[in-house]
Amino acid sequence: MREADAFQTESAALEAPGDFLSELLAVSEACVLRLRGGNVRELPLCYGLWRVLAPLSGELRIAAGESSLPLRAGQAVAVCGTDELSLLCAGDCALALLSLRGLAAERVFAACREQGGLYFERGGAAVERTLRAMLSRRGPLPAREASELAYGVLMALYGTGTAGPDGSRTMPPVVEAALGIIRRDYAFLEGIAELASRLEVSQEYLTRCFCRYTGVTPGKYLNRVRVENAKLLLRQGRHSIQFVSDACGFANANYFARVFRRSVGVNPREYARQMTAPAAPDGRDESLYVL
Image 1 (cartoon, helix red, strand yellow):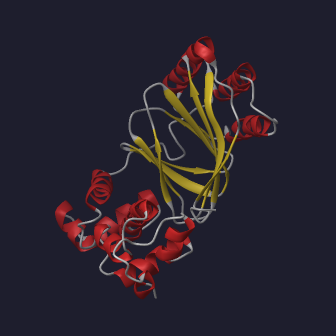
Image 2: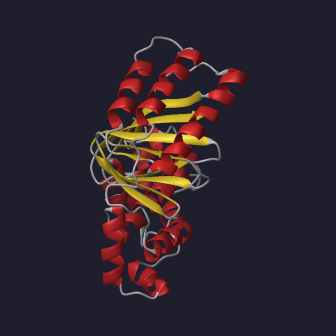
């Protein structure tokens, strides 16, 4: 896989639903996401689109805005909003994803939220069963059949939601602020000591809180964000390894190469080659920067 198996996708082929089903209940996406442990991925959220997620194997933590929730196989959660959804997994994880829109989804999930919440302790089985049925079809799945299957999921989840396994989804403000600074200033942060100083807390306190709510240390999360942005630059094929290292905030190109290899499975030069990118424009031998 081009992304070194970090984010594989197995998707069902879906017919376009048309105006009527789009307004009533439509499936815009049905897939299995296979994430390698130690990776952080972002899924976009938008108004009117419901993301239903259910781990098929492994465990992960999802975070959107000020909410954070751990998920394991057999459980499910429904999310809608305008923020990005972060998927944070310590080990390898397979995640079922259904993206639904329409009046039926709005009404059912609104009722679930009023009756208890949008976390479903035993909802994963219904999501998995429906997704498997969609993936088993040869050729595009008719929009009407997809909507019928989605309605079955809604009825299975209806009335069974709660506020979460621990009764709370809210991240401490210090963790939320740390995530925001890392995502915005990853290229300029000198380290976690600087991050703690900017937040006016001790490094030990920050690390303890961050680990509890994300499952990783702030240093590891910072490197993950830097690696993800390095991938984007490497895929462009216009930059040397040294440039990418500097642009993403690594101390030097050799350290960048080590971190990148541990995360992706190949060194930066090999990753760029797999992406069919041309050689760096300055003509330097990028292997000089790889240990």
